[in-house]
Length: 304
Image (tube, rainbow, N blue to C red; front, side):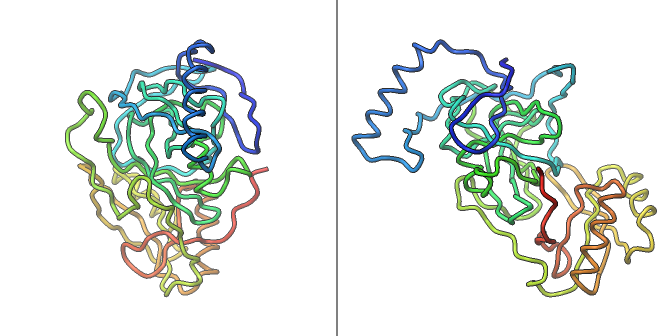
C-alpha cells in the first residue's frame, strides 16, 4: 500500500493511495522502455504511450481493511448503485500491479473502487454531461474523503473530465467480469436492470430532460428493505403522486419509489433538488414513462 498524492504532468486528480505492492524501478523500466520502442515503430497511440499486455487477475472480494483510520468492508452487492465524486489516475501507476494481480494500464477502461468485488463491470455516468461508459473494476481506492471511484486516464477522457480532474458520477454494478482466474463469489452473471454499452464501446450520452416527451418522474431510490421504501414514500408525500415499482437486480428484488407523473421539467427539477436535500442524493430524473432511463436534469454546482 502506498500513500500520498502522486504527481502527474497534466490536469486531473491522481489519487495516491492504491492497494498494490511497490515494484523496483529497474524491473519495470526496461520492459516499459521496450514497449515504448515497439510502439514507436508501429505508430504512436493517442496518449503517446504503448498499451501494456493484458493480464488475467483473480477473483477477489477481500476482508474488511482500514486506511487512514477508516474501515472498508468489501462485499458482493448486485444491487449496488451510488452517486458521488470520481477522480482519475494515470502515469504514476502505469505498469504496476492492481489489487487483484492485473497490470494497470492508463490506456484501458478500468477503475478502482474500495468495496466492489474484483474484477467486476460497472456503468459510470458523468452526471454533468450525460456521458456513460462501462469500465472494469480491478483495483482498490480511492481513499480520499468524498471520492466514490477512481477511473483510469482513458476512462476519464472518454467521460469528458480528464482536464477538470473531478466529476459527479453515478456508479451502477452490472456483473462480475468473466475472464479472471478462480471462482466468483456467486455463480452466474448478474442481469443489468436496463441495457448498457458493452465494455470498450463508445460512451453513451444522456439526453436533456427538456428534449424528451413528458411525463417526468423522480426516482428516489431502489430499496431492498421495504420498510425503508415506505419511509421514503412517507417523507416525500405531497410533493407528487407516489408509486412503487418492483424490479429484479440480479437475484435481488428491489422496491423502487417513484414520484410522478410531473407536468414539466422545471417542476421535476425543483422536486429533485428538494428530495436530494432531504437525504436522497442518489435520486434522479427520468422522462417518458415507466422504466425510462435517466435524463440530464440540469447542471450540478461546481465541485471546486
